[in-house]
Length: 394
Image (cartoon, rainbow, N blue to C red; front, side):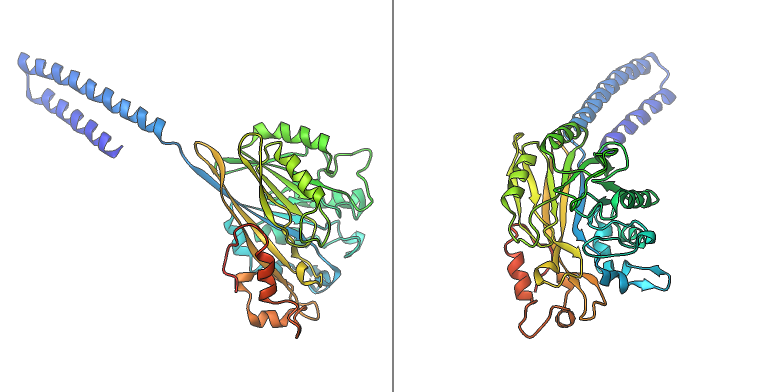
């Protein structure tokens, strides 16, 4: 296009020169002839511009990172108290740059943050200090899911207090629970719109109040069909978060697989799975529109003090969405992470496995002479996930 502009400038300069130097009728005739030629050239140039505009479609991309279960036990709360407050930011320091560099980052916040008047607690009814909310936002998370089985551990009041807390942090979008309004959320970045819906299999014996049955989104095929079909035309890509499956099961169970196929039938682009607290495989499922639904059945734990080796290994999902002449996922994979904590439950911290060392491994709660937690074990789990592994693994 720079060449075209120069050509127009030369023509314009040439016409001005003619007007300033030639006064005869012959000159006027030449000017008229040149003017005709100029208009022809301009027409050709504009035609070229039109062709180029039609041929070049802008390309936009957006990276989405997702983390699994953020599960805060009493030991984590106890070891992160600082005088009259709490600071959980050190837990995320080794993955903070990864989270920040993604365009958007998702996390399943397994526990509510209802406030100290409910007393801070761990299993089986969780309530985490509210300082965690700000720590997660500062780490770089943007999308927080609360459709999980612990959403109502502190009752309706506790969940509403948690939602009120998130409302004080405008950079966070909460999915899966709301005090009022619709279930769907749309987030736009890099000229790409992502639609989010989220569902959980149950609420540990609790139920949403009759006065607000939409407080937490529960798995219900009729409602899911309606919500997905309503959201699908409003976004470029549709993401569904699923709290599902059987705990501690390394393979997705039939109910998960059946539900994944049902979701794919509605042309969803991505399923983010959590709840089993261990890693499960990924797979691509056919859609009626000819594309595929990418399904990560379980991302495992991000943070916990659970003391089984399968449960300290999780992963950060990384997906790149592209929008040009078409809409598609150009790349996807997992960054394996390990939740490190020592024998006395101090030092809880998330490490990408590619940064985890032998020295750290030997200090882990689960390290023993029988090598119950080892790099060999980690690699054996990762080899079964049916997706790309991002980062070097020893």
